Image (cartoon, rainbow, N blue to C red; front, side):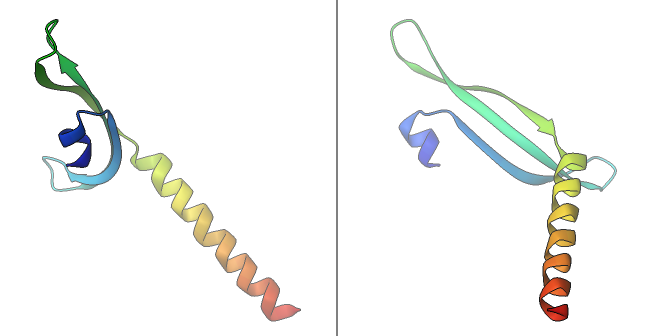
Length: 75
């Protein structure tokens, strides 16, 4: 809402439910569009499926945290 009120570009990640009921991580990016006389017309943007990359990054973070805990326990 802050980006909309300020007419600024925005980028955010969130989960979106597909038509088959599966939730996927997506990246939403958009930029404001104005008429030649400066009238705000809305946003133009794209939503990109980033599910595999996000899941891989989350799995790596969990693995590194497990390794850190095991290292502390064995020291």
